[in-house]
Image (cartoon, rainbow, N blue to C red):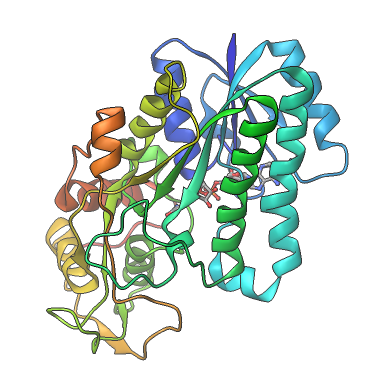
Length: 327
Ligand SMILES: NC(=O)c1ccc[n+]([C@@H]2O[C@H](COP(=O)([O-])OP(=O)(O)OC[C@H]3O[C@@H](n4cnc5c(N)ncnc54)[C@H](O)[C@@H]3O)[C@@H](O)[C@H]2O)c1
């Protein structure tokens, strides 16, 4: 039997593909390479296919039958909040439409095991110290809405035809498990800072007047390799009794924007003095996960802290196409 990893040529998916391959699983990657890169899938088979395309369901069914797929890990989605506000219909078509195609193909072929990439974006602006899975999900943008709808869709399929699923709500993913698998997108804090440094520019902080100890926003940074391991734990748990579970994937510890930038200074030996710019709309002051449920039910916990996250991101960036000139 094989595992279909949709979006396996992307940043997080490629880490999971590598871990699965290392433990001897037969992996088939489905990816349209819109943000993914072929080289990242290693020895796994790659099927180039847009899951939101008109012929996607039929083509997915074919691959599922041919390859004897029994589980799916679904990473493929568009993930830029600002873009989702500008192009909501396209986001819904990609993230929700793609999932509908996938679930239809699974139902028709009898594939009933699935892990889904959800996001802390489903919580919106929660005013709590630690976000638990019971915290009311109130997404504030189309991106977050598509993730919440994805969870609802899977729950309905669980009721209707016995889909066994888990959704992982990722917090702030960073770092690299292998230098060649660093985050290629400049969308999150760590790559954004490294990108500025590579251009010879000062890092930027959006708002230093939040009600936090140093005035900058606090987030829960999770090493991508720890996150990848959480997928394997969730997949293995689908064999047990529980299904339809939602898990925060975070550490329970927050770091501020300034602390992350300082850590980049330590890892790189560079001057990281930052410019402070106005706040961005929609940034909650604090977003930190309670990782209790995933620890209890999947026996998973993060093994890497901020220094390792940042050091691995730095090493990956320096191994990439636009290293920061040092010295
Ligand atoms: N990176 C983060 O910080 C973060 C945080 C929370 C949730 N997530 C979620 O995790 C998942 C993976 O994120 P990532 O950071 O690895 O992003 P990524 O862009 O690197 O990976 C997404 C992969 O899916 C593929 N893809 C996108 N649309 C597709 C389509 N219609 N058909 C087939 N393939 C398609 C892309 O080519 C890419 O390989 C996404 O669902 C994202 O919403 C990411």
